[in-house]
Structures are given as structure tokens and as C-alpha cells.
Length: 467
Image (cartoon, rainbow, N blue to C red):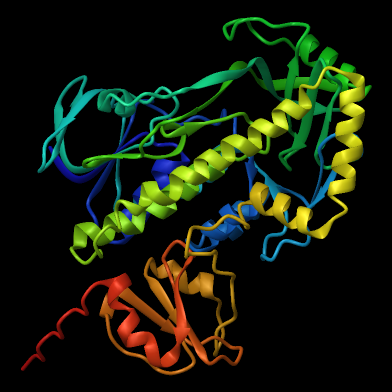
């Protein structure tokens, strides 16, 4: 069997990537070790920038149905993070289980023509200058390109010989999906008391996710979590267990901070947890992986189609590796603040945090990093949604999977590589927006024709008229 692109791992990152490539007309096969899908999941939060990415794929409204919106985060006692000022249609954190995001992305990928094979366990891979050979348990598959989205224990990364340097941050982290007799007053209840912390978040369907850690009871990952254990640590942290009555899922795991030194080796790429893992603080894991996929998909499609400018595919690692490092730092800082043992240190943390978050520049930076709205690339800032002349929005235009040229004057050229739209607001400049929602170029309208080749390659030759 041969496929143009093989994706290893059918989590959210792999599914979004497969859907993007299939929509672009690229033959893509996604291989997943699990034989069946699961409704048990660790991730539960979808941040604003990810919702924008889902909006650009026509999925945001579906994902928003049934989830719980959190507009203000209470981190520790007096520290509040207000998301309502974010410059986006989605100024909140959406609490919804990962499997709902996966279901929407899988449906989109299949509808676009992607092929998904479950029960396919990769043993190893090797590559040369022309293709990649993948050895599964029962067969050999070749591909022109491979993307490893197969998680923290990635077989793809191991086959490439890439190290995964870092350290363990927390052990014996407990997760539980439970029902509560008396839910907390805050939509998202978070607190830390030095030797323990616990977060309680609603899924919007009557179930709540509790994420907890207790320094006083550290055991290995294979020791089962009990409801009594969850009740005790929640009472210790919040003063109440909120009347935990039953659980549909209990799990224990450990958390590492690690990042691969490279996201690309030849014809093979890493994305999501295969490339970086970090503490669950801030809920940025799934979101960062989805952003990896959104960055890589259009660059890989452009390369396969033969019009990618020089260096475009290498820019995936150049842009996403620093973001992965930033997420490791920010989530690591949050978890270390939660683990402070000294009462004096915690009081200082609370007082200093509250004072800093009274300053607008600090608020913009903090909310921008956590939500992803404030994260951009060198020379390519995030493109905010704008209303278009005649109706519609920029992110609706991005559903084409193409670059979008915002210009007040008509422009023709580049065929299927470009969508041209006029912004509703008066402007004397043009803006070229990448398929992933970042600004590629901004300049005078008169400079459009000269600027586009650097981003879209040479203009395709006009097709001869028929007849």
C-alpha cells in the first residue's frame, strides 16, 4: 500500500491535519493503534484561538453546543484572570470533553476523503530521499510524507532517533468525571493549599471533571483512584467535596515537561504530544497540538502541489518549536505556583498575582498566552476576524483552505490558491492572510501583484480556452 501522506495517531492533532490535507485534495491515510474510539479523555478545555481555528473549518458552532463557557479564571484565592477582553468572537474558555472535538474532526476528515485505519500498530519506519517505509504488525506501507501525532510515547519519534529531553513534574495526578450534589459557585473552581490542589470544571451535561493532586499520597500510576480519595483531596483543598455521588471515569497518571529538539527530520514530522508534553496547568495540551496541525497542513499541501516557496516547509519547525517552548514555560510556571508549600510564599504569590493582574498590559499578555490569541510568529501576527463587504467574515472565507487577500480593489490571479475579499471597513492597504489565520503580508494595494509570488509561488499559467 502507498499513500501520499501517512499520519500516525488519530487524536485531535492527527484528525485536524488529515481533514485539512484531504480538503486540499491530498491522498492521506491516518493509522491509529486503537481499534475503537473512546469517550474517556484527559483534555477538556478549548481555548479561544483554537475555537477560531475550528471556526475556519466550519466546526466552532458544533463544538460550542453543549459545552460550558468560562469567562473568568480563578487561579489561586485572589488571583482572577478575565478573558472577556480578548479581541475575538470567543472571549472565554470552553469546557467540553476531548472526544466531542475528536468526533467533529473525524467526521470532517472522512467527509473530505481521508482514510482512517484503526487497529494499525506501527513498529518502525525508515526513510530515504524519495519516500518513507512504515512497518506495521501485519504489513508494510510506503508514503511520500509521514506525520507522527502518536503521543508522548511516539513510535515515530523513537524511530527517528530523536531524544525527548525533560523531566517529570508531577506524579500521581488524579482525574475523575463525576456527578456533584452541590456544584461550586464558580464555573471553574481552582485552588491550591501547598500540599494539594484541585480543579473542578463542568462539562455542561451534568458531569464534572476533577483534576487533583495530593503530595501526602503519592503512588504509582497503576494504583486505582477511588471516589473516597477524590472526596478527601477535594475537601482538603476547597473545604467541601461538592457532594461527589458517582463517577464514570477515574484515572491516575504522571506529567512530564519534554520537547523534541526537532519537529522535522527529512520527510517525517512530529506534531502534538509527539513533539512536546507539559503539565496540564492552563489546559493547553490539546490546543497546542491543534495549532501545530493547522500550521503544518497548508505548508505540506503547498509542497505536495508544487508551488510552495523555498523554505516554507522548514518554517513549520521554525514557527512551532518556539511556541512549544513557551507553553512549557507558562504551564510549568502555573504548576509550580500551585505546588508552593510555604504559607508565606502562597500569600506572596496571591498578593503579587492580584496586583500584577490589575495592570492592563499584564492582563493582555497573560490572557493572550493562555488563550493563544496573543501568540504569533515572527513577521506573521494573528489575523483578527473582520467583516467582509457584502456579508460574511474573514474566518468564513478561510474555510476554503486557501490564502485570503483582503483588498478594497478587485484583483484576479492565482486561481485556486487565493480567495479575494473586500473588507467592509474602508482601507487603503491590502492584507494577505495565510490559511492558518496569520498575516503573511500587509502593504499598499498597488504592491499586491509584486508581493504575492513570495508567498504563493509563481502565478499559474492561464488554462487555454476550450473550443
